[in-house]
Image (cartoon, rainbow, N blue to C red):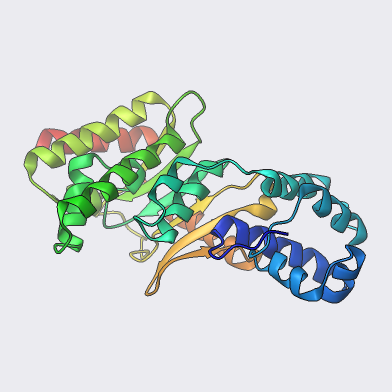
Length: 283
């Protein structure tokens, strides 16, 4: 079991799921370790995502835990066996680890749902829009630090583009579409880019108009990433300390409920497209 100094969110999640299976079986870490001829310390490292574990060992542990959810077991085995390095690894040491974790979560998602109130979603931002946002939020950054952030944000689009794009549905408030983070031309280009993505057919957008009754979700921003099985869905939300990854079922259910509530306050996709088109005419 090779040790890791900085496990990714995906590796931590794999370990957490193995711990949940062990606890559901009513076994102690030392008992699971003994079954694998390992140590309690090594088992703790596996369950913390610090140490790697093979797909074969996951299948053995699942059998020992009497887990009969074959889809879940194979999904966990696939996670353990995935040794590919994604494009985001090129930014290791350049951007914070959480940025890499977000890109990895988007890459592996089976679907993506997002709610954004005050800003165009990162997956739909143009380079000029992203640059203006970063420049405003981090005015101290020199170009050699700003450029990688813009480039990284543009490369995240690969999750929802290409030959097999991940289904992506986002709810955007009218405020986010109207705010000029740069200038008139930049805002117009951003709206046209969103319309182009809608026409491509891989993006579904719903708009919440400012005059919509019954919407009190100003703090509702969130991302919901579908897993290979529902048990492995992941939620992402902003917190004072940064982006938080959510995997507890009760919290995931709250996010699903939140998305449904916000969706009820939004226009349907066709009306939303027409709404955005009208905004371009106003500019």
